[in-house]
Length: 131
Image (cartoon, rainbow, N blue to C red):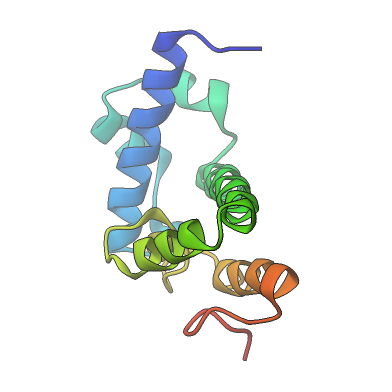
């Protein structure tokens, strides 16, 4: 089911606000109020999409991992060029995956990225490995 443009725009604004706050502080210090203020929405709108910032984090991680899986599937079909694109993109400080893998977010997310690469290529992503 496709969501209408207003819903997509609202979710995009919430995610942008969340990622900006996540660059500044840990997820457990981010409030719904500050996200709503930054995204210029009311609390009811936030709660119609997410139960709390942790739910937002979980949904964002899931979306990003699904995108990465699609890109990795394409890289197998297209001789690895997309794999290099994924890896180079992850090096960018502003990359969503870098923010989600930061100490402010989910400490297990980076390991899940590495596990995904390992399951496909038998190699882990440097800097994203489980310790």
